[in-house]
Image 1 (cartoon, rainbow, N blue to C red):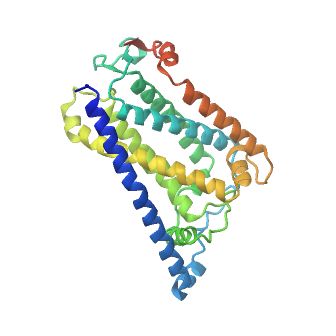
Image 2: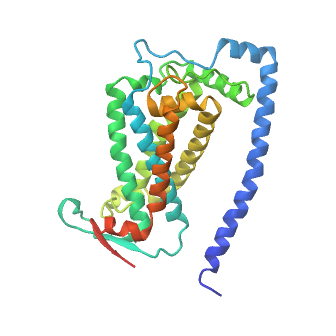
Amino acid sequence: MPASTPARWTDRLLVRRALWVVPLVVVVLAVIVLVAIWIRSTPAGRDFIGTYSGFSPLPAGTAVGIPVWLEWQHFLNSLFIILIIRTGWQVRTTRRPTMFWTRKNTGAIRTKNPPRKISLTLWLHLSLDVLWMLNGVVFYVLLFSTGQWARIVPVHWNVFPNAVSALLQYASFNWPAENGWSNYNSLQLLAYFVTVFIAAPLAILSGVRMSSFWPRDSKRMSRAYPVEVARAIHFPVMIYFVAFVIVHVTLVATTGVQRNLNHMYAARNDESLDGVWIFAISVLVIAGLWLLARPILLRPVAELTGKVGR
């Protein structure tokens, strides 16, 4: 029996499971839509949406509009997240890597852990993680120093019933009025809050535990935070990011694509084509880096910090 047979059977099993998930998701979404339409047709449902429009008021003095620095942050986060998801999936599914990297243990990157050979794909995944974390530090600093935090951090309890109202409006295909330039609806606000302040830290903390940066000599730390726990967290968080990206892109495309792209890429609140062109260029950049992330092209870069071999 060929050595690759078990891997092929595993891949087939994953495909079969995925095929069962698709119709299940369709059925669940259909039920949600029908229930939302029924709720909106009742007097209690109409009163609820009349009381809670889907928008929670922002703190007094919150700046209107999206600054230019946030445009760059959005692009960089999109770039890193897409490539991290891709390399993470490759690390999880590749059975026999063809090229490996062993770090140098000298200079600024000297650690107590002895050098360990890892696949070149895992090296790229970890390198992207580091860049994403550095970009995240800049994002957090700018977010709180400019007051933009108020747009994605809930400050009133009514954000929760307003989020339910926004969900009912989305699910019943009578969507809330979009006003992202000045105030996200409460469902968007909570989604951004979870992504920035919960999902991202969980991805980092679980990723560090699974990486070669974790101090393996510290048995106490390893017992307190078992690697099995990190693995149980890391993959679901990746699934969350995939779902977030899909929903985010869908809503951008269906709620006024030109205006939304201007908000996100051109720092403008109009329907010009500036944001569309910048977005198109960003897609080409991401697609180009996606295609260039191949072992033969990654090798010279990886050799700057370690030894690469087959």
